Length: 455
Ligand code: URP
Ligand code: ZN
Ligand code: ZN
Image (cartoon, rainbow, N blue to C red; front, side, top):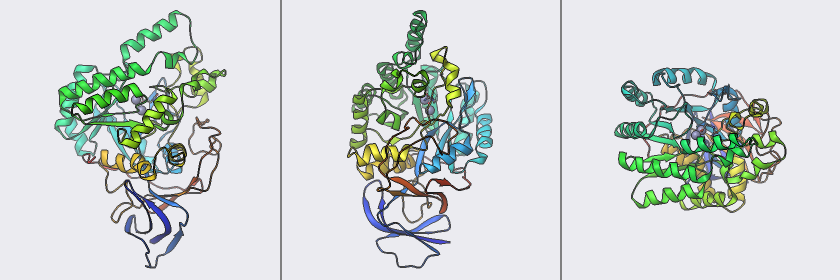
């Protein structure tokens, strides 16, 4: 089946230009100013933007965590992703401590069988020993060259020495580590102080996880990466102090990739100080939301290339699940939905507000994640030979975000009432219509074996 997308503005990571896009089967076969060739279907794209399907390199679907399971599994999560223009997710396979990587991978393949968009996995390293190291080659062979480690959460963290060893072993095989940076020990002490003082409001969450304890962990991680002589990815970066540490490491000659998320670009810590407990709890995530100044530094980072990617850290819990933390702020499940709203929120707050230009938007949501996570040029660009993952964005179709009618199983939106500039009109997954004016069609995602980073 040949489909011609006619009359739109194609956006790449370096330019926005008038072009038609011709697809056949699952692929793009031509991108050119005027394509005269006949097609089975012509999609009128005049006045619209044609964007490469977004890649969300940071989702948590069907994750058992905080004594519960995330609201979104791979079915609802991937439908939410598609509705938000995301045609590929990279989720974190997460074996528990004591379980093998192979077991975790098998489990995640099972969970993802119902995934509607294309998907890959990062592997979580929450244990480090000879048998885990012996499994690394199998992970690379399975198309998993990226690994996540935690500097917080007792159930997940492995400590500085093992992190150094894991980083070295992974780098030696051509892989990359992404790390959650927060100083666990001091956070625990701050939490104990709050509890001893009888404080339990939601704002205890950000107050016990301040920006400088994230920056400390970033700084320590970067020195560990220096010792391991390894490039590194800092995931869900939230603040200016952390970005300063990144700048120092880059000045020393280190290769550091920075991911941030829409919530850190657009929401601030006042969300935790609302009168209504549940309204505040909806925004509990780690690291927490910061200040408008931190947002400005992250936008600046996107403009000047200090920040490479905007993923979501989609980790959704319903309001009923959030209520489990009513009597203890540390029991509020940490995480927010985001996969369905990323494109429109970042377009509105970024492109339409003049903070970033269109190519920067496409670099952050499509091209850079494709390059960094070994999917480029199959994904991340509208070019001959690439998968026909296409988002048609109508910059004139403003609307208001709401939880009603979303594909996610989360019953609230952190962006309730947010006025978008424009809308995602249609989404194509390998040339199959996956979303039409908000209506998500049944599609079937495929597992993507990923290669080495090319960013
Ligand atoms: O609070 C968050 N971000 N939960 C998801 C897990 C993580 O730390 O990435
Ligand atoms: Zn994390
Ligand atoms: Zn995460």
